[in-house]
Image (cartoon, rainbow, N blue to C red; front, top):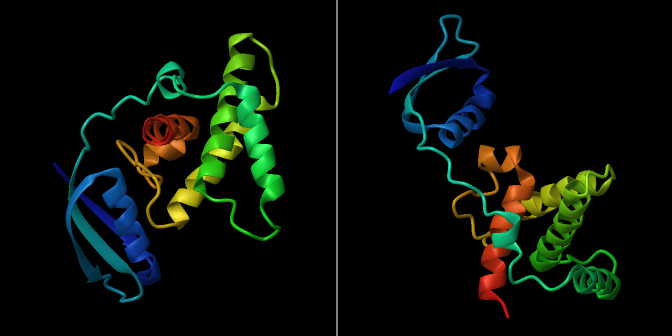
Length: 170
């Protein structure tokens, strides 16, 4: 266990407290003004989080997935059928991120360099943003969209969410 002290602008205090709570197991945050009264001092007792759990492997995540061509067709058809300006929905973002991850995995396995990895990461970030901005929908076990491990491994988050989705959706 350790003590963290942060000096920040008063408007940033809530954001800093939230970030600390995401990164560590924290106790209550104590707030005091600095001596000049212009900034805020935050004191919080913290402890390291338990070791991170492993993300599902691609084989585990995509064991129940349809073939890549079917998924490409589904995402293209869904994008085409959705009226402009309407939300495509979580299933679209999840399946798009998953199929791009699977394509990137194939090119990486073959030792090829392509834009597939970048496209997979960007699609994963879109899913994470969708999950972060909306209530419910994500499985979030072991990692929620706002967890630092998710930011560090967005494709791992896609695999986690797809593995759960594939088991619970026909």
